[in-house]
Image 1 (cartoon, helix red, strand yellow):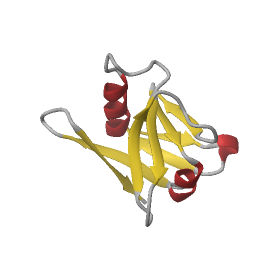
Image 2: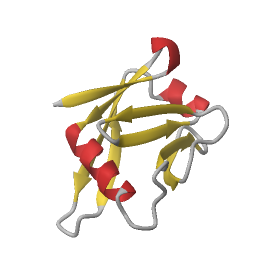
Image 3: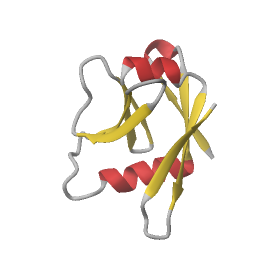
Length: 102
């Protein structure tokens, strides 16, 4: 099953797979994670994106949530990820690797 994460006012949509949702929830369930925390996606350089755990959204971030998986999209990332899918592969160790499919 795939969940959709909508941006404010229903403009662009980032689709989040069940695997990505589960990986994000596991990260956010860590004892040191904030109950308001989420996975933040922001552009860095040359079309690359950076994923990080954030205690709260930065001003201007789109805050999207699906079944307890919170994602904060920096406005530039929101534009880059319109109509894309966030997925994850989880290693045997439990460490997720996230990737974007267009």
